[in-house]
Image 1 (tube, rainbow, N blue to C red):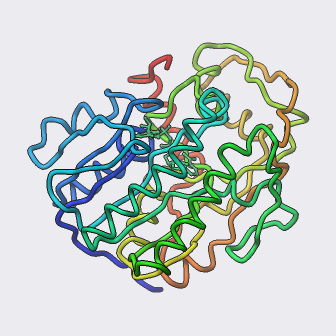
Image 2: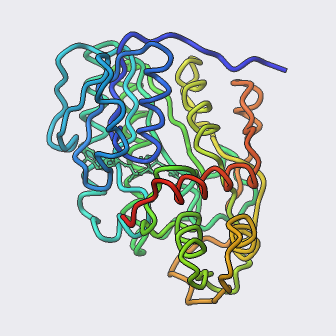
Length: 321
Ligand code: NAD
């Protein structure tokens, strides 16, 4: 088996560092001895996510909208561009902000990386595959996205971000990498962000019915956040340009996920079926051959274990956000 590449960074800028995935990335980088500047406008992130990090001398918080400019005090050698509303509830509430963050924000983050001669990593998404006509999806699949559907503000912003990243690398020689993250879950998700895992966990802990959309047979593949963070940092350390899928290929139907959450939470909740959102993909599963071969990366946390940790966090710290 290949060993996941690692590299030590002196100073990383993490846009969206106060969000769910971003805050776990900041913590992992600090643990590895990297100084971190987190740039966040708190449009969907939360101060609580980074509160423990503020005590660390190597951690700096910069409250700013990356779409309006990106200036940091000291040049980074790594820029992780993770700023963007990510849950459907958020990007439907913030459509223009989402598009500006994916376009102007990505441009500003790329310019910063280029000027500093830093490695740049774009957090893209499995949503670039839209409602896929091929399952599982490998990186060569171009996707099936409705450009004027309600989800397009997110999907097309990310597709544009990928094109911009590629153009920047071609034009300026910027050292770029595109990671396509599939559904990630874990502690620090917001109970009301509309994504399946936090919604089910919140409902199960409150003893409310778990609301499964459609007939519940649509599948998702869920990756525990620690695995996602490891994959992102392995892609950063490797010289690859990507795109590379980072996700857990174990598919689960929404109905089975709901049943599992009820069981693990020891909840009396029943399962209720509600209307399925427009353009909701029927299947979503990564082909991770590239990540396995090039990065020696494989997800390690099984759904039962990841959900147990997530449920425990929601019991202790989960807010109603
Ligand atoms: P999140 O909403 O928890 O985090 C996003 C963070 O970006 C928030 O802290 C928010 O305040 C910040 N932000 C948004 N717009 C900004 C702007 N213009 N300027 C500065 N900060 C801004 O979402 P997340 O789930 O942590 O997702 C993080 C990244 O990973 C996103 O780019 C998302 O598209 C990508 N991603 C996430 C998943 C997932 O399952 N969580 C899957 C695929 C891709």
